Image (cartoon, rainbow, N blue to C red; front, side, top):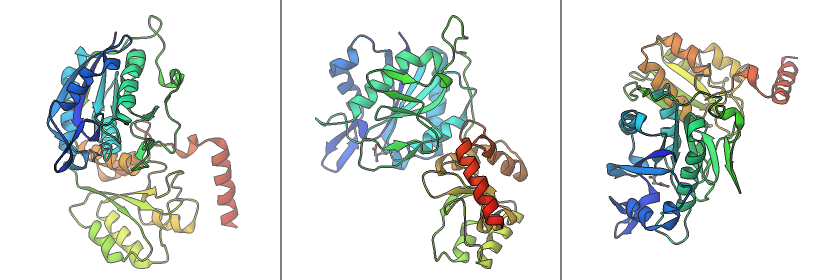
Length: 365
Ligand code: ASP
């Protein structure tokens, strides 16, 4: 039987209807879990709950809360085989992205989950999400390592997910990589994500990961829109900001005919601000070589974040600045795959890469 620590941070999943609307109430989620027979049934792992005080709506979470989660996992690391972080859905993708950089090396699974409807409601997605996450950990804890997010019968890489639906039970997706696992009749995880079965394979290392605190660097995210005035962008790029995730159009494009706009970017990168281009569409990658509009950004010192989510790019900027790297080094590492958070161009599926190259040749004519 696997030993699992549930780190309960808050979120809709454990909320109770109060006169002021849904709110987290201490002990309420634990009491319901104890009262529900499926959580006590055979096949479940042994689990204990460590609850945050106060419990948080994840909209109120900040990097200091990521640190509390990471430190709780570090401090309890040797005593458990896996960790289930119960979390609000609103910023869960930010937390899972951040934890994937903060905990290193990580030889055990950390899975985040939550729900769209509280466990206390008759019809809910909370019971399924919690039970499946626990059963998944029971089955795979010894063979899985890293940060993941489980929701609606899918297991995703923690730094590839984004919240895509405010209403549906399928609230998350990892648009640019397939889910790592699927729960149907069986709970199945892709073999590439698993270490070989013991006794052939090594067992998880009990040495606690080091924790990097995030939040000291000044980073920001900014979405382009038609009509954006360069002076607004200049405000975002003004000191003390060190890194900005710029959500650009399509393949990472921006209005290159707007010289004031380009000048604002050039001036900021010359001052050492790292500007990372990600794409606004959910699917696909920023490719700054493809269009003149993208090339102009490269010339202004902007670097490509390829297919990173904004959540992962922000977490990575925080993390790299925390390491004390020079600006150039941060810019270089933003384009490298450190924790599976991006697909470098040379690793793009061949058909996509081929089409992109053909299009690039056509554009150059
Ligand atoms: N506002 C809630 C939260 O993120 C929403 C949820 O859990 O679904 O904490």
